[in-house]
Image (cartoon, rainbow, N blue to C red; front, side, top):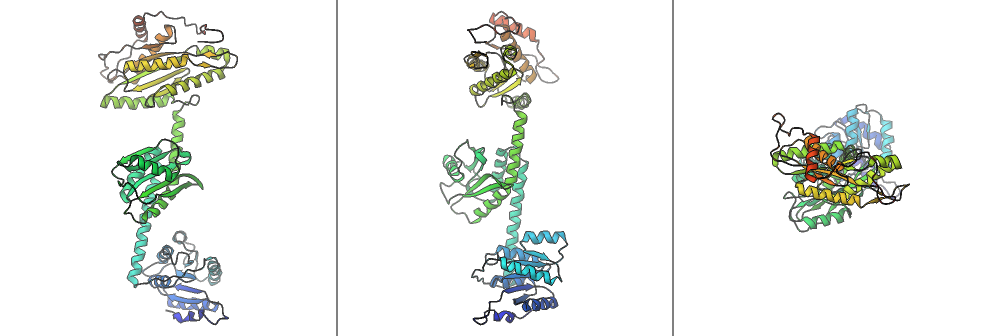
Length: 526
């Protein structure tokens, strides 16, 4: 080992500049000696070490201006030495130059990831000197630092702890990145809360996306309103309904240290924020955990939002903004399967806008589109959040009322009919257009297929058309209806017979079906 008295003159006289002290770590004595003499001839004070443990102990005791280390060292490699010095407060800003095969892609990758200033080829002294000068000039001024080193075992322990921390961080990062496969923000938030509650104790955890499009809070079952209010303040989530998860996984404490907040970014753009509320007896790891999770969550969150937007576009009718036919059918298939397994009721209605063809003929298709949008707006306002409304096609709409009786469905349909009939639509070229609707309602029979249920509601709507329009008709219901033995669904019904039965029940006479607008007060159409 080169004697440390080679830099004892660094204080020198009052008129001599202070020498920059370097630490040279190389396992080959001849290489150490030759390179140390060359650096000393350039005015540097050089201390040498023959392995990574000895070099780490020297650097931690008294941080040098720069470290030059071989990539392959006995005991502790140059990469491990670099990681250790980067992780320690006293040496985190000391530039580290690694020497090894710079053409090896893996060497370049790990040197960069470990935080090395540069990876240089061996034998290229001129390049080493030039890079060394840049590194020393770019480094911040050193802080006064002293660390008690208790021998090689202490260095190995410190390296082991840093490696464990790096491994733990990489596992957390991998778990968070895996959330990119989620199909909804709610699912992402649920899975994230399950994971984080296993590795860290917190009072509550919260996420908000840009514009408060999503705001989720996970908290202990006994801390509902307080936790949600704290999370809103911490994240600045002033609006929007909260998606709340309550369970025993979060710690039930009435108060504690302030929440730690991390901004979630993707592609240089902020997409949300993440917050954890530490427990009273927690440690300092919360801040580091928030840093890692927020740093990795951007990609997963952005991907999930894009999936949601794609699903929403695929399930939405572009003209009205309601659910489209395909999405409604998919929902109905799932709902009927649930009802067959667990029981329950379902009512369905079909709405047809009266005289819609005449609206298009007289005022143009733009006016027809406006009518459909206005009808959709009325339906969205009338029905409950638990109800499902969709555009079925053309001027037809469909609605489903889970857990509703036939009487309840009829009353809901009547509310819709009244709202339509009381709404005067202002169209260019008219003094006001009164648009009405004919509605048919049916309640699902035991194990009835979706197609059969729609056919019965459609038949009732046909009866409403034939009976004068602007009315609600209810399809007959019988629990003893025959079930097809092969598919377990109701056999197909005769639409004309169904319509005839509905007409006989109401005593109404069929109205003309010439497709013309019925006369009303001046300038108003029905």
